[in-house]
Length: 82
Image 1 (cartoon, rainbow, N blue to C red):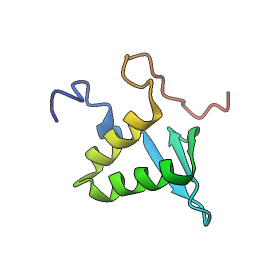
Image 2: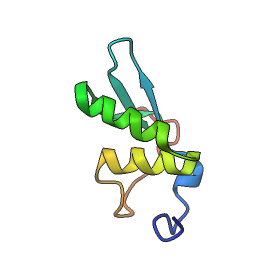
Image 3: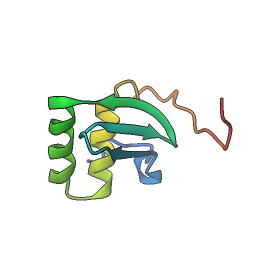
Image 4: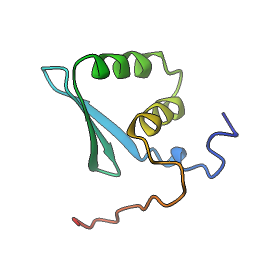
């Protein structure tokens, strides 16, 4: 796990998610919605989250499913509503 998050970005817990009654999953990165999962994709995500042993693993699952969050060009939003 140490080799995956060398810059310790996931320690800040930048990702979170919420699930609706219809099992739609909304993934957020620093409070901004970046992905919506529905159907089997949402079910698969929820199973992976439940299987995670700690919050760092949950963050890694969310980072991987959102895609392009590994090149170092991600920015933190500091209270701005761009």
